[in-house]
Amino acid sequence: RIHTHTHTYIYIYHMAAHQSISIVGGGVTGFSLLSILSKRLPSIPVTLYTAFLPPPPPSSPSPDVRTYALSPGSVKVLSEAGVDLGSRCQPYTSMQVWDSLTPSYLRFSSSSLDLGTPNLGVCAEDSYIVSSLHEAASKLPNAKVTTDKVAKVDGSRLTTEGGDVVDSSLLIASDGGNSFVRKSQNYGCTWHDYGRTSLICTVRTSETSSVPTAFQRFFPAGPLALLPLWGGYYSIVWSTTPEHARALRGAGEAEFVDAVNSALQGGPSRYQADTGIGLVDDLASTLVNGLSLVNMNEPLGSCGPFAAPPLLDSLGSERFLLPLHAHHAGTYYKEGQVLVGDAAHGVHPMAGQGLNLGLKGVRSLADQLTEAHGSGVGLGDDHPLSCYEADRRSDVAKVMGGIHALHHVFGWEGGPGVAARSVGMTVTNMAGGLKRELARAAIGEI
Image (tube, rainbow, N blue to C red; front, side, top):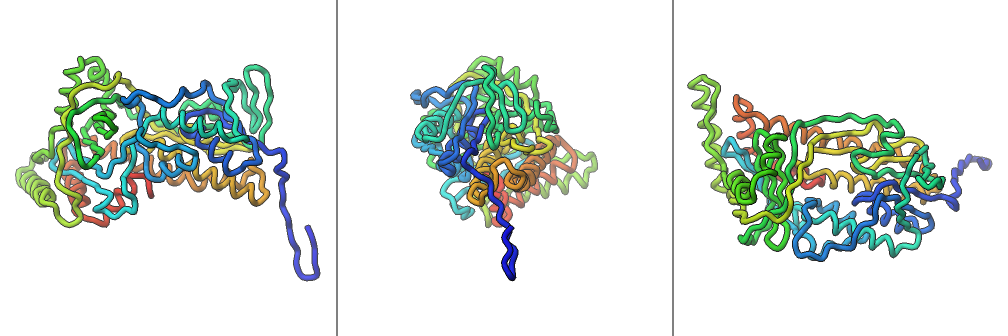
């Protein structure tokens, strides 16, 4: 504290000479942080601990089964980390969502809604992204990747199975939904089991489209998404009951492809109310079907008429099953350590926001640590970590709440709720301003 005749100045400074960062867990979020922090903080050693090193970038023309629908914001984060998606991605400019029980649908277009971005999103492979991130990090002198297994964590100190003890200024956990760090450090975590399973695979079609479109049809048991890839491939994510998912996985190829085509080729269906009260049923059916007829004639705010998805010809990969749940850590940080990505939160895949939320966290944490370092504040201090949590927790909670609401609303199979859902979708599709905000939310930009 320095006193003058008229002022008192307080200087807070943490010596950065011996600061370092340890990242536990690879994957897209871990490797993204490794590259971005190493670039932004070139004087600070950053070490990533991962179970295995990523293989070289895939050379096969066929895409891997594990793919993501990346928002424009996520593409920017990956670009800063050194990833050039190049030909191993498929931008899409339109998105179509429709109901299996009513004639209602929503169609988004990046150009018609003036979203300020040429694409609604980009579909890309996990394997290509991670291998590209690893390659980018290998060119940074202060970035290090090791396969030493972490056996113990205590604050910012970690101990490897080989007995090495590593003290760092900050330990970042990006070790996934079953995070070892989160569990061993007693962060607490709320879980919600949806009682649903996703079937994931790639499929092929001989049809071509001039307007790359992401499709999603909602059934009472869960949504079926068809995401465009490249070379005639699409990614399938079908969320349904565990019994149905197992039956789909066990079906022969032709039977499976027929089941997907049957589910996707069913266009908007005529609605018949079922309250059991004649006049109410007639009025509700007339309202829902009448509004939908207007909607299909491209009113103000429309991004085009309903478009049938392409007919699929064959499987492109094995079929995998993934039980669905959501989780949220009780806090995102403790003294000297912080959770990011799936270690902090996980959501239902219906909105494709899991990795996008993780990469928003990467950007937020990198911003806070960059500002802290520039101000002479310790990387593991409370201020940058609390600011990161304040920035991300409310956004994650809103997305989780919205997805949870959609899961229940589209689970209704009868009653007035179905009519209300249909009218809401139709009115939204007809209202340009409302749909623009919904589209921004769907691509993770708000």
